[in-house]
Image (tube, protein in one colour):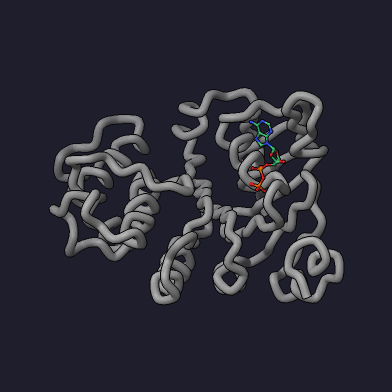
Length: 241
Ligand code: ADP
């Protein structure tokens, strides 16, 4: 199987502080991987390195087996199909739900889509994220959970190969969390890898094929969520007794 994403011995330092320490991680196409661990473990920094926001001191990030994106700009990485939903949705005042998704769709294709192709793509995505009935609403009027789904839709519209979701269920109700789990599962495709950073372990158990537990910038555990729950070290540093 080919690796969608290979993080190869990456080290990130902020001054003399090592936030990520020779970390290696491989995510396959078709997989949903959750990255979990206590605050300060390095999860956001890892996403920042993959997205080109933070430059590692050492190591490489390889996309789709051959493409070295370690020193590529954020824009180049995004255009290659490595996309991220940030924790806080970026909602533009005055733009409708439809317009948000349309902006995402246009960002994902090398050539401008025809009006017709764009409309079709936006409607497909609106269906997937459950916002078809809200297309013409100003995005700023959506409920918190709906804004999260809109943000997923905006990223999804570009048809990403790697989809990174940073805390997609933070602040959501139980019902919204269930819906988000179903949504994430529906986004799985053989030619896509999904990487999720999340603190809600029940959610993680529902969506993740494997989990990577980070601790102090290193991998403490990799495997199923069920095995993570049974792992003494994971319980000690993160899950608690
Ligand atoms: P997590 O997402 O797992 O909570 P982070 O990746 O945000 O962890 O942070 C890892 C460590 O790196 C933390 O100790 C944090 O304080 C530190 N850190 C993150 N970004 C910076 C920065 N820009 N400057 C200095 N320290 C940082």
